[in-house]
Amino acid sequence: RSKEFGQQQFLQLERANNNKSQLEQKQKEPTHSRILKDAFHLMDILKISQKHGLSKVFKRAFRDTLFIIDDGDKELVSNILIKQGTTWNKKLAESPDWIFRRVRRVVPPPKVLYNAVKDLFETYGPLLCARTGRPLFDYDNWRQARNILTTIHLGHVSDSSGVPFYFSMGTDKDGLTLYRCSRGTNSLEGGIHQNLIRRFGSFGASVELMEAALADYRLRHNIDVC
Image (tube, rainbow, N blue to C red):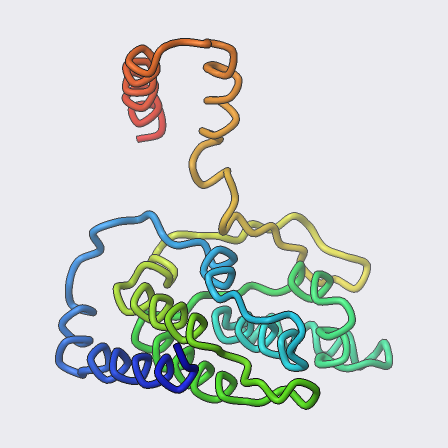
């Protein structure tokens, strides 16, 4: 199917999801699940062509739209970078890991995130590659973009209020705080993945026995972490 048809379907879903009364009603609903879509896997839903000249630029823009940097942390880091003879934007492009160890980031509420990501898709999606002449988004990409917006609209991406993701790990030579982020890591689940591998990896048991063993493990694990 054509990219134009895909974009039309994307816009139709966007109009439906962007109904103000529906969105505001969703914001008033209680959080039904603390299990959130990992941001990396969310970005990985969109399978854009790596041959497009704007693919890397778009991925960075998508990342920076999902994660909002703490203003206070950014100011502290920017002041140090100025003393080092460089700038925030240059350091972010050359060594993003250095930046992200020294700043905290938040995934904004659904209403804010939805509009920001929608604008990003509508801006970058139709842009043509200078070499191939093809747009960044084809039909499948517009469908994937719709799914991403739906996930955001349902509140399955934004950070849960009151849940800390950052922990201080000390300071560097410039006095900047070094942070460890637990977002998207196995530690959020109490290390359950490795425990399952160690305990059940060599069972060689039937499906029925494994279901019973997992049910027992799940109960004991939930009791321990509560």
